[in-house]
Image (cartoon, rainbow, N blue to C red; front, side):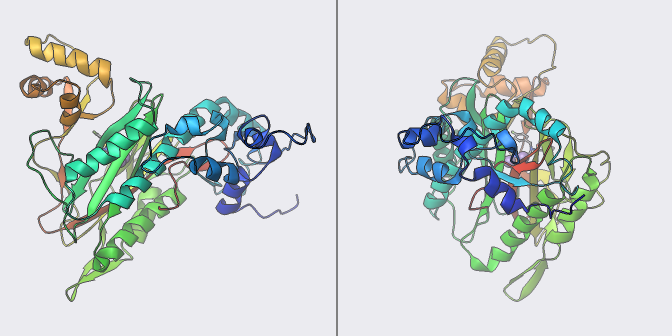
Length: 431
Ligand code: HZT
Ligand code: MN
Ligand code: MN
């Protein structure tokens, strides 16, 4: 067999977003310029990844240019049809292109095409929302304002519609030694972002249950930039290591190796960057943010067995810590809550039964926060909610804190292990 060099990730993505007559036929690009050349040639290019790919790069740029500033247009309506939603970054598996050029695998992928489009739409919304947030976040803003800026923009761009389309989970705005799962509660004291803070913005959007979960770290202090660089590089290493049949422990090892190759010098003190040893990435299933498989971020995580699987979606997220224990504990009032779908039994409190009914109708199994209950008119939910948590109908997810004085950074992407190639669906030009 001729040894054709396998395409690089960049070539793959370019191929996917390349101007290609087969991709834009009878759709957006054609709509852009009225048909001058009628039926030029109806060649079915047997290109890779064939008909599985998103719209071409020029078309995508042109549709993005139609968004307003601030963004107000639902992203879905910027694109002529779902097949033209932009692809994420396509990465070949480490198999010398066997899956990539397999007709059987391409056929399997075609069967999941609609799901891939759902993720691509959520990802494009995520990119546009975070670009807007990144332009506006500055010291002095309240964490509540940041979370609401993100969530309000995301609601509009995903064209929120009941459980069909909406937010995937509350926008986390966790600062410094808080690694994750802080979002303001309705009655929380206001906290302003300060210069030098290490802020993790972690939010999700979903379309028909396909949740895009992605996060970045904001910090305006250049001295701490190596911490952010370390975690971003570690997340990239995890993405690169990920693949069908790859052992989860090997993903953790790749992440730890890269993360620990960095150090940060602050005031003459040198701090090694350490992965937080009890945080994980996770598999994602429709309407389920944590579907049961955990992706370690250290080499020798206890209890981790098993491999990544074909057609599964994973959130690859890493957390790096300096000047602390690199270990988080649950601390403080919860802001993140989720229905326990299998909980059974009698509810002996009428207000709790009513709140549970509301939660099932409104969020189903998607995580929610107290601010979202409040804005939906459930302003006096505190007693009923704590009853539901105490009795196992609702799980609570408190803020996750490393030791006082530590600084934690996070980067996260959602990736699809498609039959022919992996897609870093939430990839943007920012991270
Ligand atoms: C749980 C509850 C929520 C999932 C990860 C995560 C934000 O830490 C196994 C691995 C929202 C998300 C989650 F309300 N968590 N990603 N983005 N949080 S997790 C987890 O609980 S369980 C990771
Ligand atoms: Mn997340
Ligand atoms: Mn996650």
